[in-house]
Image 1 (cartoon, rainbow, N blue to C red):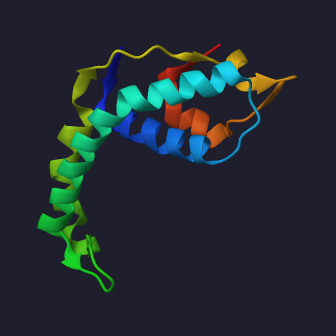
Image 2 (tube, rainbow, N blue to C red):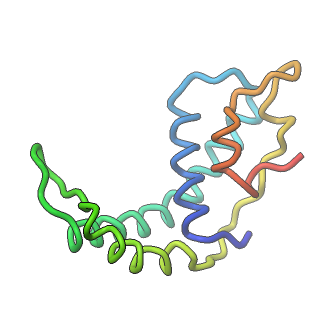
Length: 123
């Protein structure tokens, strides 16, 4: 499946939230989401390392560790991050059916998470 780095980044963020909460859904849905997470995670980690490097480059140290990009550097950060996020990659992952995430019509995935999962969830 062809996905942008931004789609992978959003999907892994949503999948992490879904997986770490105890969401009501059929076992097949849990399995498919866990499998999807494991297939997307390597690409996410590469992108995350690139993003972290840009944050260090354009950011300032913050109390407690790490860096934060101040407003005045955000345009430069975004100018470098946007091409990375728009890059298209091929990932050996199949979308999960919405029916596999629901029990009696009630889903274990929030609407905001469905937006983040985008093409990785189908009807």
